[in-house]
Image 1 (spheres, rainbow, N blue to C red):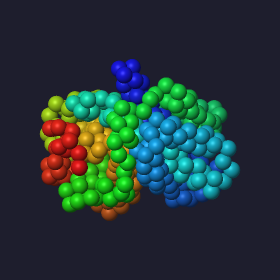
Image 2 (image 1 turned 90 degrees about the vertical axis):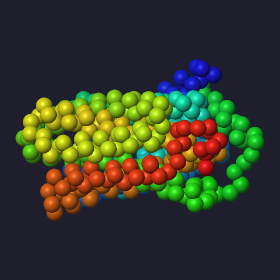
Image 3 (image 1 turned 120 degrees about the horizontal axis):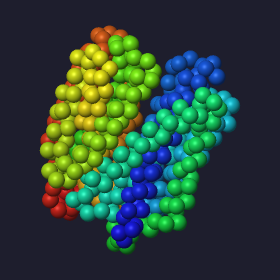
Image 4 (image 1 turned 30 degrees about the vertical axis):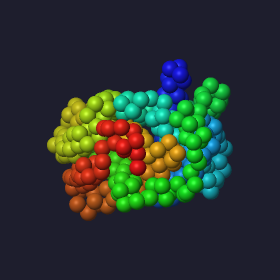
Length: 400
């Protein structure tokens, strides 16, 4: 079983990392797609939104299927879908085809997240869930770096279409998952004891307490994603204009931020396991808000790199805890569905933040946009201190 645990952890890390690679390849190809198909920027901007819609719908469907039919089987299906759809982008001849393929990429990727988190939650003891989920999210960051490397090495010489052929890499992982990994003991026991007789959505809202927790976790997920997209979409261009940085300088800032994120994720996982969700999230939420405000005072490239790493550490380090947090609230019978429904809904809502940030920048300037971003973490701070602490106490006491 020990070897299975390691294989499940590595597979989940690779799954989220390769999902992140497939999804992020679009960011590096977007301007080329807009240019080749002669479309307005607004139409090109629909692609990330379509991907997020696919993630939400795919998360609901595959989360349900994983809880009913088995984690491993459905996990491999999600990998096949987003990998093949990404590779087919290389052969798209119209924007309609690209829209459909990006929806399918999101559809598969959205299902993969919750299943990976459920697998790890069911394979490791509760006191290690935070650390294990942090390793999965670090895997996701490695995927973004891989996408940047592929884009930098392939696009200038072979064009944007060639980069999407690398989307086939996850298919190898899917074959490994299907052949090597068994279903978790927890899932097998849940299927032997009982079957879910009522709707999965009803289980997320079965009483006032559960409804409050579900809505609270969804809002926290939206805040987390809003902060990430708000920072990563707008800060590079702002810093280029303010500090006169080149594109390469902006890329160095992104790398320093990702390094800070990864270290923050690993740190957060340990703090979460040791002190529980209220203390861990409260510390990181407060310091995330404070650190974002420091960008107002950045006046040179070196300070920008330092602040980027610090903001990444606190603002995105918290992302490591959502899989463990959600998994600890909901029983095995709906764990994949709960993770996907809650986090992907938050991702769909939070993904709209660049629009809001752009509006605030146009109306009031970037300083007020930074203050807005910093203030949204107060919402999550209130929620985490109102809902129960599932990372303390027995498993039965905290599952809703």
